Amino acid sequence: MDARLKRVMAYVGLILGLAGGGWGVEPLLTYLGSFLPPIQRISVLVLGAALGGLIGFILFPQVVRAVLVATGKLEGRLSRVPIPDMVAGTLGLMCGLLIANLLTYPFSRLPRIGPFLPPAASIIVGYLGASLAVHRRDELASLIPFLGRWGGRVPREGTAKILDTSAIIDGRIVDVCQTGFLEGPVVIPSFVLEELRHIADSSDGARRNRGRRGLEVLAQLQQTPGLPVQVWEKDVPGRDVDSKLLRLAKQMRAKVVTNDFNLNRVCAVQGIPVLNLNELANALKPRVLPGEEMSVHILRDGKEAGQGVGYLDDGTMIVVEGGKRYIGETIEVCVTSVLQTAAGRMIFARPKLDKAG
Image 1: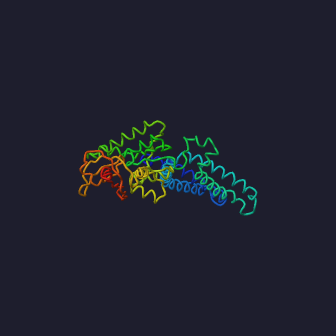
Image 2: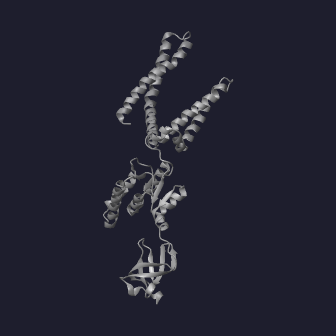
Image 3: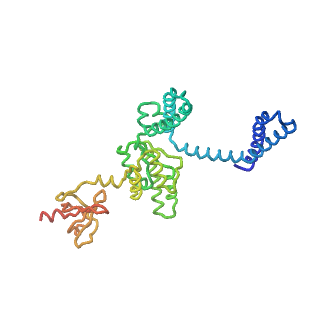
């Protein structure tokens, strides 16, 4: 509140205080009217009005300021509540109030406690109705069709997918979305976009290229037919991007799409569903068993003498015993063993020609 507005509020408080002080002492003057002479009655009236004006002049600006601060905080919290939640909560509150009044009306004429039952039941049952309606919003939307259309489609719990920076820069999310395996709206928070912009403007060349790749991936996602991409414009409280992402996922009851190992663990601790692209890639890797045959292009020599190293299309390393002499060639190999490590999977094989010989 600036100085000019504060001064205006002080004058308004002075006027209200003068009127309130005068009205406040009027019952006292009516009671003492027969005992006090007119001059004293006027003095009491002036004194009451002056006291009320002083209190209003001092306290009214503070009261207005406190009300404005509380209203701003309430408005900020309400602005972060989705429209479907507000509609469902309002309907639940109305139903709760109606039920409370119907239940307590027969008991409202009871002596002593009767008058207090309706307001107490309205507060308790109204709160329970609003809370229950918000938590069971999806089921309520299936019963009331217009609720699903109010303020946009009400997504079912877990259908929205929130992308973090690592999943966007990785780029594989585009292929997953284009195949149609990822249903529901894809949500891109504004703070993730801001982080990508900072990365794209970095002075480090490698970091700058990663940021620009992320922006290109976003453009490809928006051009994917049949994929609803939503940009969440509202800011979310939080210290950093990850904490904001977690808060938004809880608020939207959405899943987080990420490649970040630490974020994946934090989401698991907080009970937030996670779609990890690395885990998906590992699950879709072809299963290789000893004795199977395959073609591999030998790129370089291995750590041990005579070994040659090649890679499958998904990046899995194949170590070929005696494959050093085939560097630069594509040969048929036979799998001898498969080793799963924390860093990934390694396949050991030997040239098919050697086996035949």
